Length: 232
Image (cartoon, rainbow, N blue to C red; front, side, top):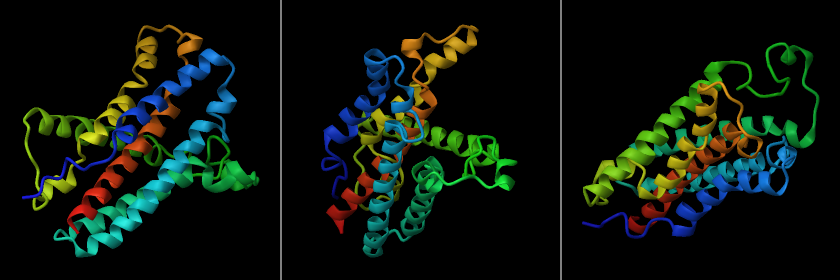
């Protein structure tokens, strides 16, 4: 049986890149304490990087959908299609479907239902904002950290003919998902004690978390695609 893990994503991509992304806001705070507009603004580095990552996830996801035609588990064609649709929604909402780039005005009727006056859906309802984020966070904790950690600790070797080997994320998702979960912990601690986050630590962690969750989607799809090419 062919082991799926030895030829996964390169280390610079699954380990060092997420660490750099998580550290980047802190470095910018040290270099320039008033760096918000460059880092988090509508045309900021974090938001646009998030979009690029999701765009790559969409492209690799579509390539995977085409490649999975020769795969023994047809379920994954539907699963990958759903992931691609989710990434399209995520990417479109991140840039308000182009409004942040092209600057069109928000219709008056939409201003009444969107709490930030933008042409997106996630600012109109918790069902379209907090709920998807919560579900993706749970997926990151369970699928991106706990399950692959269990496989690593138990030294369980998953093979290409095992359905579960393709469904669960591999070890390459652990750093990204762990950082996505931990990046906002310090803000929650300060809030718990009713104190203000020190300016140098006030990195608007929610934006960084969204970026890392987008990277999780990309890592999952890219790992799937690379391993699929090896057995197709």
